Image (cartoon, rainbow, N blue to C red):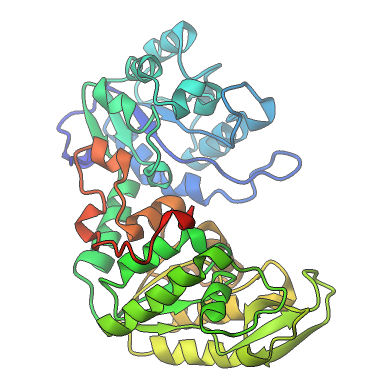
Length: 413
């Protein structure tokens, strides 16, 4: 796989850069967090410094192939212009004669932002005609959108078949480099911290991680499925009964492989899912029948801190509890502090985890925060990343462990 800095001459070249500017907007359509835009600046500035013409392409939300004005890229074009200190023109569409004319009239170095790619259903369908229309806009295609690398969409897969040259940008390079450092040749002990709400989205990653890590720490609502698997009552807590046998299988497999798999020993419970709910701390053996587990407890936080103390590499995906409510935020915030204060190479992926780190102001103390939640998890699972494969690069399959079919059945959904 080639990267943008390996190209010899970009002067006056039309360079289509696929980014992920799917940023959160508030009710007035103001950008609430522009970190994804800032992450793409090194690639964009490199092309501008080399005298190229930049055409920026991204999606926003899920308009399902229809033009939805509230999902226009207009706010992003304005913010990008301020960050670049340069005018960024917004195209009326992302493909078509009018856009092609606008691109042909560009001067070097200039920047155009294409309108939302998902206003066309050809984007998510990886439609060849839509892919060709995108490719006609450029002399060089650059994929810098790791966050959608697990999607086989036209702007990250199909376009590479028709663009004269296709390379990866600096964000993509950094993502893959850190993944290799964590999973291919890690400094050990290597620990994976996996949390979040749904076990169904994480158990395959956990199984694959068992083949690579020395320790696994489980938190969030998905931990309830493991607790249920070892015959603890979880009250009214959210858990996935059909996945209890899978969780049990993973516990058994971890023991066979000598991997230390940690689950909570105490928890914060509440009588309802509400910031005003009555709460208390209890051991996992004593969860009241009509209460629900919403966070790991202080003893678990201490246990997890001790487990990570000697680790040299830590991968983290998913919060430890419902941290959006203050009463259930301590477990996640304690994990943020633990990872930030460690001497380990720390790699974090997942939007919710990212939010918690930013809230505590610990961003600078994390080695790398991935720009992609789903793509990051797919890499940990060892799945093929279609966009990376389209560029001729490694896909995660080089760390794919052998599936234990006794664990994973059609029940996993």
